[in-house]
Length: 280
Image (tube, rainbow, N blue to C red):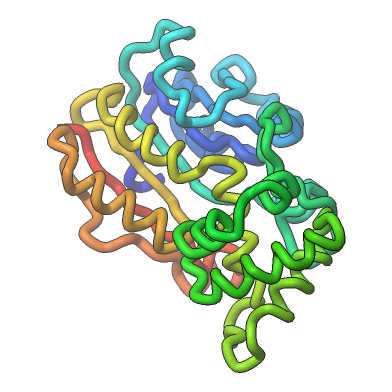
C-alpha cells in the first residue's frame, strides 16, 4: 500500500481479487470516492469477497475475468486510464483451504486445479493425455523440478494400469519416483509437481506475460504497477519485463520481502516477493 499509495478519487485495478484483502485496503485508503476495478475468475472467491466488501459496493466493480483480460475488461467499462495496478500471483487461502479442487497435497482431493471451472483442461486430463516428454517439460520448466524425468516416467507407468484422479495418488507416485536421498528437506517432495501442474492448467505464465505487456499502457504518468509473486520463475519474468519496458521506471532494485513479524503472523507470506515500477 505504501508503494501503491491509494488516493481519494483514484481508479485502481486489483488484478487478483481473491478474498478481497487488497481491494478492501485500497477502498479504505482511497475513500470517500476512490474506485476499485477487481478481476477474478474463481466464482467462489467472488461470492465470498463481495460479501466482505459489501460496505464498499458502490465503489467496487468486479469482473469475472483473469487479469490477462485487463484490456478487454477496462474497455467494456470505458476506462482508459488507471491510477494504480496490483496483481498478487498465486493461490488464495480459499483455494488452499476450502476449494477442494486438488490444489493442496495436504488432503486427498480430486485433481482438478482449475481456478475457473469454465476452463477445459483439468490436472487429471493433463496427467492422462500428455506424453512422457510433455509431462517432464511441465515439471521441469514450470516447477523447476530436477527429478522431472523419473516422475513423468512413473506417472506414465501408473496411468497405464489405473487412472490418476486424486491428490493422494499423485503424491504417492511422486514420492516413490524420487529416490529418498533426493527428497528435499524444507518442502514436501510433491510441492514442485503440484505447482507445475497448477501453472499448466491455468496457463499462469502466459497470463502473467500478457498483463506485463498490457498493464503499463493503462497507467497514468506516475501511477504504480505492483506485482507480488511467490516463486523464482514468476519473479524473474516480472524483473526482466519491468527492466525492459520503456514506459516504466523500476522502484524496487531488489524484491521487497515480508518481515519476520509478517511471516510469524502469516506463514504463507514467507515466499512472497513484491516488485514495483512507476509509469514515466
